[in-house]
Image (cartoon, rainbow, N blue to C red):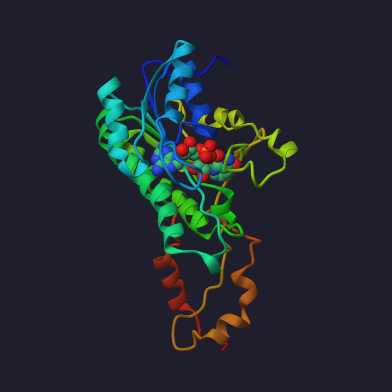
Length: 304
Ligand code: NAD
């Protein structure tokens, strides 16, 4: 297979001064894209700021003969980041919402500031960047968005209630962007990566981190944002050479007569059916409540 190329395309990567973001930038610039390297340059807890993080990556790209420009705004001012793409390159084709911080603390000790900052950077930041890019995507009938979730969001993680909430929000956000964007050839997908970075270096041992190079997340993202990619609204786990798709599973469920015999006792009597995944389905939308309601109305009274 020939190498994937992105010539003439403009790729915006948020939080690109290090870790995964830097790797995305180096890759896309090496494959012909013009890249906006955004980074606020603060600590992994979201404190402070600096122009250095983005500048170093831009210099690296330019030294290798690539095209890149730095942006130092917070993702919460996403419109300024997209403006950098438009001012410098006249368009935007790909948005990789990657910026992130951590404020890990047990739920018992969580302060409003820990919650608010995490939601602001991950959820509002991704929204602001995508919202500003959206009119350009629609007008040109082309756009690719990657949002960044986490296993912490998909499965929960001790001490990361704020981060888990923000990261699962990325899934719902992506699913809806995918549905709204489809007819304009705007595709949105969400990844839950795992990689060595300053975020993980304090929580994982060095031998594991050595096998989780951040550049091993890049190939999947490269595939998903390519112009020929058809994938839209999908969730992936990626890292250490592993790529897997995730989806929802719904049990065939329990259907009861919806009348005054529909009581907690009636549910408890048939609880096994609620969580019986033998004939599970893999939904991409809500259950057909109208159809189910019709069936329920035809049923006899429940055993309470
Ligand atoms: P990282 O700390 O190296 O990179 C995050 C970057 O975002 C930093 O350079 C930081 O300066 C920047 N940033 C933070 N707040 C910003 C803001 N308000 N505006 C602009 N830039 C800002 O960490 P990473 O591991 O490369 O993380 C990249 C993304 O992947 C994050 O969204 C993270 O939550 C997610 N993630 C990473 C892992 C992992 O194993 N590394 C796992 C799950 C999810």
